[in-house]
Image 1 (cartoon, rainbow, N blue to C red):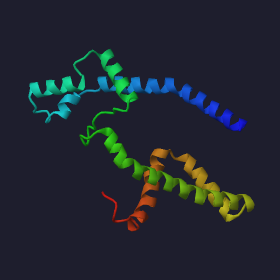
Image 2 (cartoon, one colour):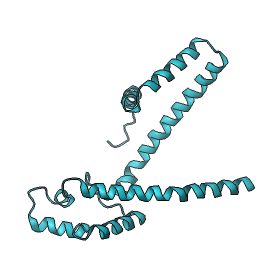
Image 3 (tube, rainbow, N blue to C red):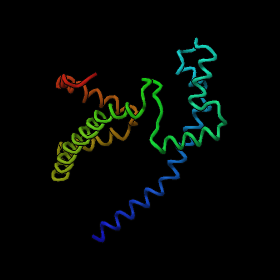
Image 4 (cartoon, one colour):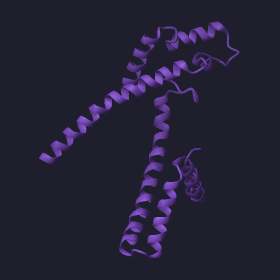
Length: 176
């Protein structure tokens, strides 16, 4: 029981120590969105051909007519209260999009983790039990080759290798 209490205290300290970094990321993304070219109000209006009045109404609704420090405070408050706004891609609330897409993302994540564990642990044990065998050399070769390439190149290749066979087994009851 004492070990559990110590773990909770340590987890709490780590959580608290991550808050300044989270705050920094939020401020950085806010400032980045203000520096990038383009006006979100024009995007949310009926396009670049929208009238000035329509764009001004949307700017007022989004709070883009307020001073930048006030916009930052409103942004931090909204993020802290769970109001993530509307998606620029779908026009829906971001929380609604997350609720719709999170289950599929979690399923993909945990399936990938399960496949990795079910393949890595037996191969690692076999390689350790039979040093110098073809399994040992194969595992070592794969790991060294994997380290030579950045994840940016390996990820899409792994996706293709795993997703193409999975398409044949895909369930027809899933939307999209």
